[in-house]
Length: 65
Image (cartoon, rainbow, N blue to C red; front, top):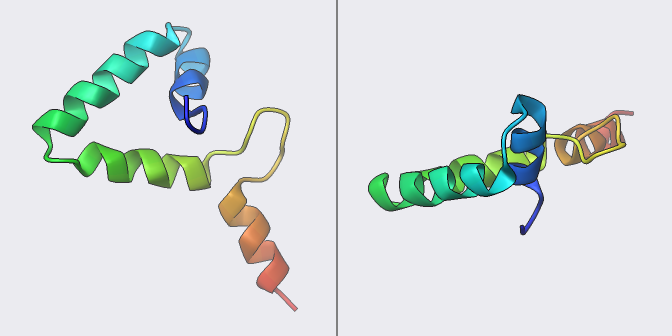
């Protein structure tokens, strides 16, 4: 719900976003928070709906001369 990562993953795989959120919550608890890092990386790397470039791609393209 923060960045739409779970909703995007759910839409991509054709499953309910709430199921993905529950899996992320369980993984976060049992991995001592490592799943939170995965979520943050996905937020930066996966492009938003309707966009062609992710946040990381946009940032890297701005840095090129």
